[in-house]
Length: 103
Image (cartoon, rainbow, N blue to C red; front, top):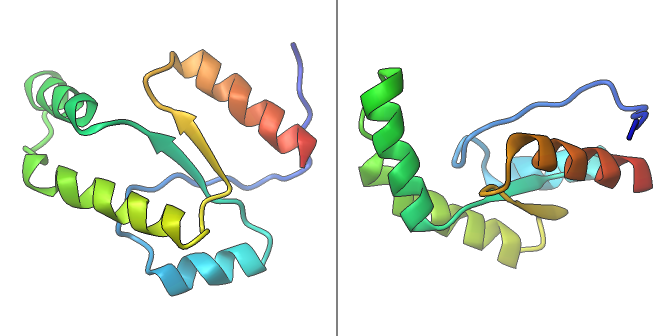
């Protein structure tokens, strides 16, 4: 399946890099806020894999705070779409493409 997206700029970031005011301003300028959603157990598994296989430092002390941040911005209506991050990358990509083609 092929999708055409008119928007040419995407960026991905981790949590806590944007204050809520920044997210509000971005939404006012037309940005869409999309959350890749994963539970704490999944984050812990990914953290261990990254430490052991990719040379990352241990992020475990921040994982619960990341989830709390996402919960807060969702409750404030700052999230346009959530995608289950446990899906294969190709499925996530397809879901993103479908979303952007319908807005």
